[in-house]
Length: 279
Image (tube, rainbow, N blue to C red; front, side, top):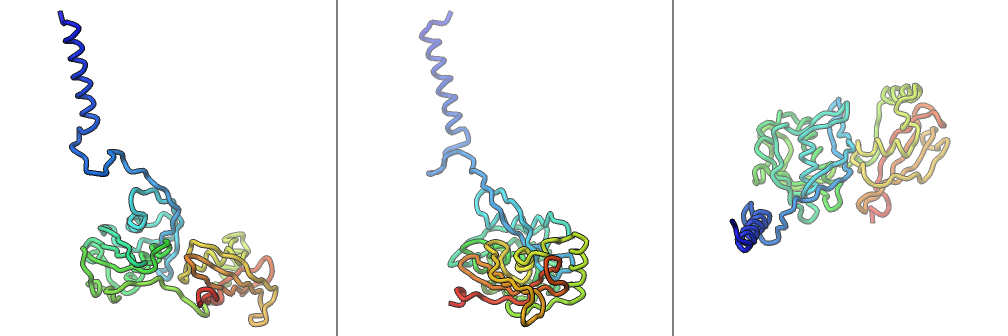
């Protein structure tokens, strides 16, 4: 028969062992560690992929759930590729992002060697690959340009590449007049007449959809400043849209190239920096 004292001692040993296992079964923790898993965060972001003609980088709106650094999560999502129909991947599938460090508004993105070795070559593919990373990351506050590294090293250019990579690359914006073929505008008008892509019938929504194709941000604010049934310059419907994001301001002149009024589509005619940005 066990005495009451022995039973009490045995229970104490069991309780102490359980406490030790719970507190340090996986080894000693480093200072500052809590032993808790990091809390997953969620963010709405825009990832830029190629259109099916390899002409434009198109933003895909996506809800990102991540632990750690958002910029790293975005580039990893770029490597995974698009989910939206009609968009194409821009980065080699086997490439990995090793780290991203941001200093003085420049994101230093360190890729694995596969980013270079698996790159297919050609100036168009290279421009889309580099541009997709730049346009995606510069949507974020605090990042205005991207510097590409391979396995921690600065490279003059990719082995099969044409672009200079030994400096930071800023977001590409196409300012000034925007030329769009009349065959394209007729096709878009026909789609709208059939009840498709109805966003083209609203100047603000059209600016939101088309602006990022020419380097403006998918994030931020688009607002109508002025609208005319018939402009003096174009003889068509005209509208002026202001876009603001990250303390930058742009103004877009929109026109109706095919029909005027509620049934006419809107396209961007020109993009200029706003007065605040110029100052």
